[in-house]
Length: 285
Image (cartoon, rainbow, N blue to C red; front, side, top):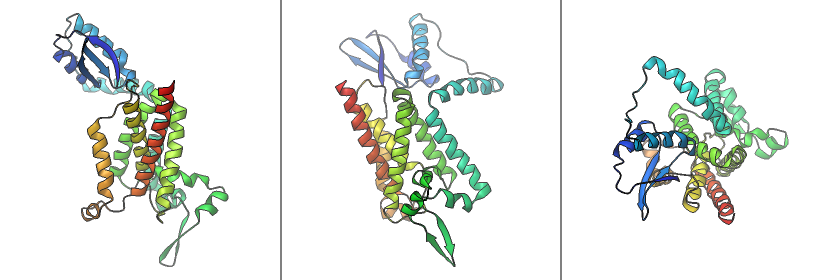
């Protein structure tokens, strides 16, 4: 979060906060020695926030009626188009994941064995696996990253892409598309290699990258206050708790087996290293 403006100490901000939440503008109001300080979660919403604050200061009504159903769709398109242009790498990650998932319904196993970290074949009734070194030296370098875009169910896909959008949007808007692309590639490859080193070859999903984004955003928000990065502390606790839970035998007993735990851990370590490096750079500047 980043500080935006100060409000009078004795101001009744109930109506303002209600209007901000109605417009889905993430914010927080804290009190210090000089009065009330208004913080903003997404810097891209600063203009909308300032407009509402001006109306609130002038005593204008803030209740914004919801548009009719037939008017909503065009409005949403006009809002999403510029947002996607600001975060092309994040949008590409989501788009490719959705495309691969849709193509799985057409090509099935043929696409899966093309995107797994090493080639997979069937000999008799047994699966046989190729060598990662042989695959890379023969030009199949995409296999180092491609498992990140491979999802095996709707819930797996939706859960991952939801957090890719939440964390990726912050990184790309605050630090640029190049840094976001670099983090995607390094975290994706790092998570995949961490999982492969355990002897597993049939795995997929963006979870390792998600944990890298989480680690990066969390460290940036903690070490560089006012940088604009924000992640609720309870969300950090939940996601780390979930990672630990899926590593236990209890997870398998309730239907959460075959989780790429090492990919989660590998991605998280990449994100923490990245967050520490860039936050240290920013603190020195």
